[in-house]
Amino acid sequence: MHVLSTAAQVRAALAPLRRAGRTVALVPTMGALHPGHLSLVRLARECADVVVVSIFVNPLQFGPGEDLTAYPRDLDGDLAQLDPAGVHLVFAPGAGAFTPPDRHTVVTVTGLSTVLEGASRPGHLDGVTTVVAKLLGVVQPDFAVFGEKDYQQLVVLRTMVADLDLGVELLAAPLVREPDGLALSSRNAYLSARERRQALALSAALAEVRVTWDGDADRARSLLASRLRSAPGVRPDYAEVVDPETLAPLHGMVTGPARALVAAGVGRTRLIDNVGLQTLNRHPGPRRSADHQDRHDAHAGAPSMSAPPRLTELPPVVALALAEDLDAAGDLTSLATVDEGLLVSGAVVARAAGVAAGTQVAAAVFAAVGVDVAVVLPDGSALAVGDAMMTVAGPARAVLTAERTALNLLTHLSGVATLTARYVAEVDGTGAVIRDTRKTLPGLRLLEKAAVLAGGGVNHRFNLSDGLLVKDNHVVAAGGVGPATRRALAAAGDLPVQVEVDSLEQLDEALNAGAIAVLLDNFGLNDLPAAVARCRAAELAVFVEASGGVSLETVWAIASSGVDAIAVGALTHSAPALDLGLDL
Ligand code: AMP
Image 1 (cartoon, rainbow, N blue to C red):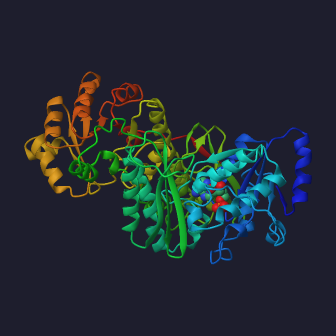
Image 2 (cartoon, rainbow, N blue to C red):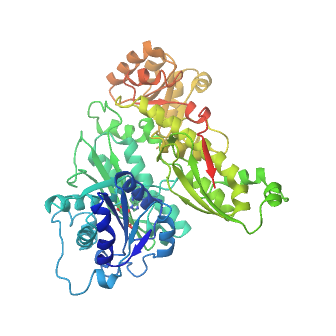
Image 3 (cartoon, rainbow, N blue to C red):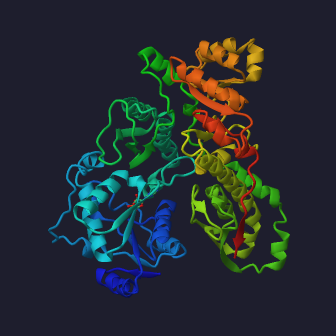
């Protein structure tokens, strides 16, 4: 990997490669790299022969009083991550030379650069476009990769490239999050432990809006705003629902795609986050009266039970799992056979195709015994046979000691994500989502639920106080579906209520008692369409989920009945481990 600091050096290094017909992808960054940046590098590698990463803390995109001098800088750490990631050239220009004070040119994308971030940070996006235009001029790449984390920036740069005919293809990489939902950002380093917990309000609000999205842009906007306003320690800046291409605010009922964007201060740190919105409930039903709408919002459909796992610290499972293998005597075999000072490096490699999950917790296992670890393919990445998921480097004894524990977690959780992805693929095009259940392995629930998200599934309740799910034995205890439903609705307050029914008669009872989220358990393919039709005919938009008898063979037929979701216990209780190994 070449590390160069001038435009002339970069041009000279790339010229022979270009003459040899190699395609080039550029990944512009400001350094302090994290797995979000590395996902951009991976996309670049998939598209082009040569990957160039620029590292430049661009002074033009910082306003007066912003964090230019405090912005984290760690060139050595960045290079150590980029080298194993297959980057060919790093361009790290000096600030003085790259943005000299005597320059005259500013690139402005009018309109788009003065809303949202542009309104709060005047000149910020002009600073981005001016420097990205210059980087594109130096590298002249075939592709340039940007993250959806900075969604507005992506839209602005696309417009710049189209308007100026710059002849580069812009690629967007999905936003990478921590297992608990927090969007990865170099600025997260500023957050104290308390602020980091408070910062979760942004991703949690967006997750809530995403899973409850029914096309009502105004409702989504006010829900976002109210969640941010009521979050302790959070100073909301904006909460918007916009057209994903024009960034124009959306109002009323929306049928096409939308994007929700938020910005807020937490402590001294300004954070941004966003999600794409697509309608999950294909049958939003008639416009509801205000009264009904309130009740619907309060109890609404089971999707609102879903939020990202609240994994705010390293799970105790890391300590427990390591303790299962280690007692005071340590790893006797490694102590006997491996020299104390021997250092090794290697990678966890996929031996079967699948979807990555559990990378953070596996990394934590290695880190806990003093091994340097870098996640190359974060949770949610598609794995091909031979892909390196994470690299490890450190004392051989420590690597071997942690290997089994890390792989146990990684193979199981990636197995959950892989199975989820298979179910999600089976129902593609039907509009139904795949949800997990509480049938999780003791101690692993949060991690397994994060793995379900990584596989493209949606989370159900995390625990018994997350929402009310009236099941068969509650019905028996309460003396019928009707009484059980009414008692649950009366007690629920703000929490969602879902009622499990096992026959059309029970379904009618639940709907008559006011249920607006039902779980059709073991209905069989003959009765499902009739049950869905009854729910669609109800006055309120009823959220309909199916469960029982779900397998990869039956799930498509179940989804085709028109249900909104399918609960699949197998995702967590029966997922086979994904074959992964550590190659040194
Ligand atoms: P920055 O170094 O913050 O300027 O970011 C450089 C590039 O990485 C931009 O295209 C960002 O959108 C992208 N990026 C930063 N954080 C993430 C993330 N969490 N997920 C995906 N892309 C990201």
